[in-house]
Length: 231
Image (tube, rainbow, N blue to C red; front, side):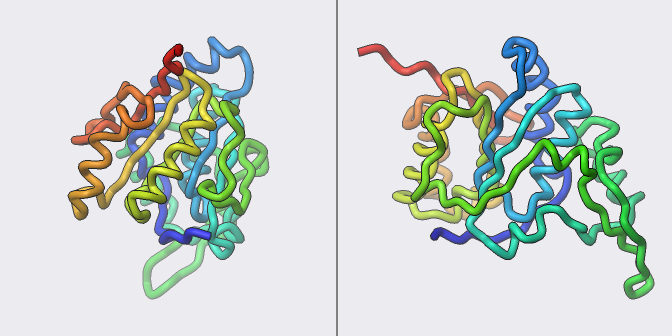
């Protein structure tokens, strides 16, 4: 399988915050049912729970199918997570674009002293855990079911792959989206690799996407899947 680094964190993705409050509520209203979301490269789950808590804070019923290839990371998805003290984590959430109330969907399990600083162990609440499931799955080898999902997230994943594998992963992800579905792509390290930057600029045309949101970044990070061209 194709392994990637597992660095992750809570409330750090502007495109997920943007999707949760400006796109998902209207999508759910028009759909009239639960939003199905695929997350490719979920690591140990912090970003999955951040997205889920933001969607709940905005009144959006949803379920996230979260996939990764790292067994060690997947064993940690229910927490508890060692993080900054709760007050610091709350400031991170408040300083981000994530809605107020996200932290109410987490449980603080303990507070311990570590070298004169305080760290909290938090875990997603039982209610929050109902909105996501995790699976070991390599999307390159096991593509998503065709047109199953209303939205998909591929954040901080694609730049780890060669162009060949990157194209396969992106095609399999886009194929899993319904026409008009939303794709979120963010990559903190894109400026380190000019080949990747060029690929990102060409990505919408190559995969039948249209940029719809910029999330205050220099490259678009939210796209919609265009309908297939008729023959």
